[in-house]
Image (cartoon, rainbow, N blue to C red):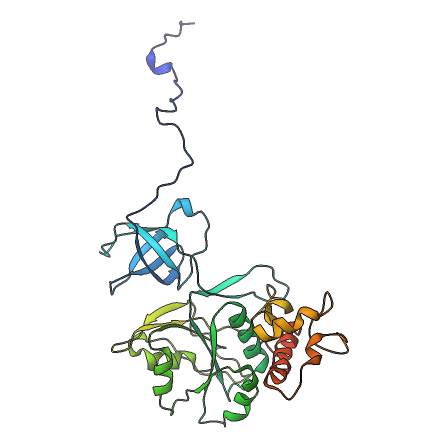
Length: 334
């Protein structure tokens, strides 16, 4: 048998660790440019930088890990921010949020989904007919807005089919503004409301939300659809998107996907009460574990001591309806 001849190609040398020691220090990115996230889709985010008109495409930097970045977020960006075709910048910073609108898939789901970040206002869009209005859904959306530090506004559509007044009166004691935005109604009040603000829209599919968005932002071309015979609208918006209001107005409209449920597994009764300063103060005398829904469930609830004919007393009744909606799984799904 021939003797094996060895040469340098047979020698395997483990590569060295290099001269640079590993460090946990992360780059400061002091040169990062800030802007607002306007779209999110499969690991890519559209960001409009401050002082710019067009969006640039970004990825999430590795150092951010799995940090959630949502439409409405303020982010810092580095890399190629030219916005030229084929370029890709990196999101390296996430600014602290001023508000967060959250929901869960249902009341047993522990996973919170951020619907939109940093919205100042929430337009809860509800049709007064076709499909019929669902008070439970509106109540749950109000809860999410109150606890998320977002100013809620009830926006009623399809006023050509039914009188919106009776449904609007159900929420009068919560002091929630109500605007009418039927297809034949003038939008001057809505335009005044959204001008200069970041406003999110939420509602069931088929209530006219996308139609309203197209009227406010004609270039949006959001897809609209007819309501099916069983009273459920076709899901016409599948991704949240922020749309700049046309001049001379300023501000943004954030159109969210049409949804059929609004879970609030992350919210408890004390969190809801905490959104109302006068009621929170009154409940300091409630027994431990009080659900604040009143007798017979809570026979010693301090809210029962408030004069029912006063403004605060009427608000107690309205807020207890919100708490009942929080406890109930009925009426809010479509």
